[in-house]
Length: 167
Image 1 (tube, one colour):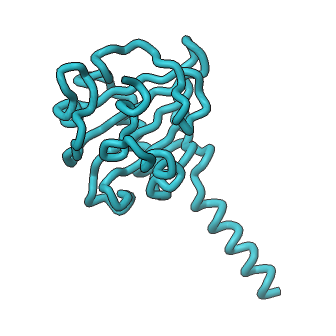
Image 2 (image 1 turned 120 degrees about the vertical axis):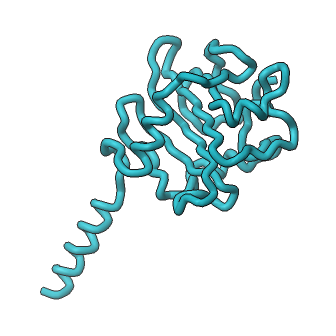
């Protein structure tokens, strides 16, 4: 009987701890709300045009575009690309919008530089991955473990890869 109760408690804990597929709340909701805001953002290469998926992308979507809040945008060069050797300052927010096709927006991939957050990875980034309707695809509490495998590949600049794949 004790084993059954223990299994039920462990199962319930795992069920409630995982937010995948659930509406965002807590830090995930904060990231989602920040990602939805577009005022004051600057587009990569100063263009809001959709870019086709790159060969190095781990995202399964045909198109994307990436924008930077004013803090992160201060680290873009005159061509709108990330300055080589840059380390983004605290408060930097980078939002990648992922599209299934040229008219169907699907997901936000979010990087938020907040080293003091309990959800930050060892580089100071808090990672968010949400569907367009606010459902969690990968929770921030996972410290970007699903993201950093790709984002640490060669050519990254403070874990960003836009320059590496979109010259």
